[in-house]
Length: 341
Figure 1 (spheres, rainbow, N blue to C red):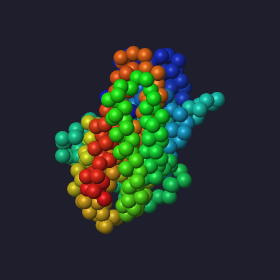
Figure 2 (figure 1 turned 90 degrees about the vertical axis):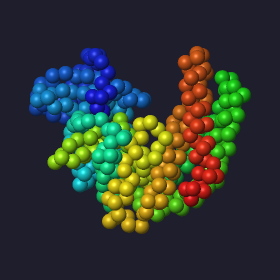
Figure 3 (figure 1 turned 30 degrees about the vertical axis):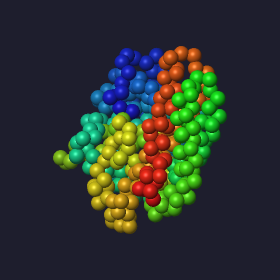
Figure 4 (figure 1 turned 120 degrees about the vertical axis):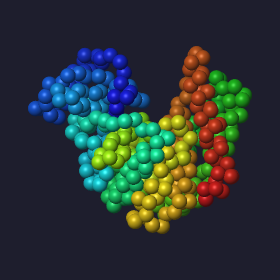
């Protein structure tokens, strides 16, 4: 939700008017707006706008499904105000009459872009994550936020397995593609057979609130009292469960991983979770990488049921196959599991 992803030009007048009208319902006394810009579209039906107000401040307006908005609103209302870490100002949620969509209004996350190779940035990200995980573990939000725990990722693994098995008959697949996908299926079966061990290991870490998409696109760095401070945003994928996916950002394969400073994170959590050492945290992060890949395979499983008509569409399928080949299969091997558990 940052201007870093601003789409050039103005949004359609009808949508602009809807964003402004919703904002004025939240803040009837708001000053006149200078501009309304539509930011880069997120996946799915979510639309994001930047509302620039007369005093040069900006409000981010997000229109998304009401179930998604409810998760983000719960984090802004029940979690972030109780943290000792800095957070964005939350203005409120507005349900659209007669639709399944809602608006979320939040202060714009200003500051510099996160730089993975900058030690001060990595330390700031680690401190913020440590604060979220340790302090929010004291809350009782299991019935408020969606489950993001080890069992939910097992469900993703099994659903991805079923989708791949059903999709092997897709006529767009080459013999080489089918060979790769059968290897992915075998890896998924091995992982499912070890899932009890994974669950047993993760029991040593308390459940907590997790961001679940703590990447460079959802983070800005501010300077406060001469110190770098992380300012995360976009909590629509947040949930309650194991902090593994957040910790995956310390080691993740993805180019947009934040890779915070593990030593700083360990130091910050030590007074609350003294039983967790560096090896434990690395293991949790590696399992989080596995969970991220499983979730991505599950999310993109529709590709195997699609009737492909063009080279461009076939490239989507190739990307899906590459995801399983390059990222799930290596993490499912005996060497990986032995190293983790």
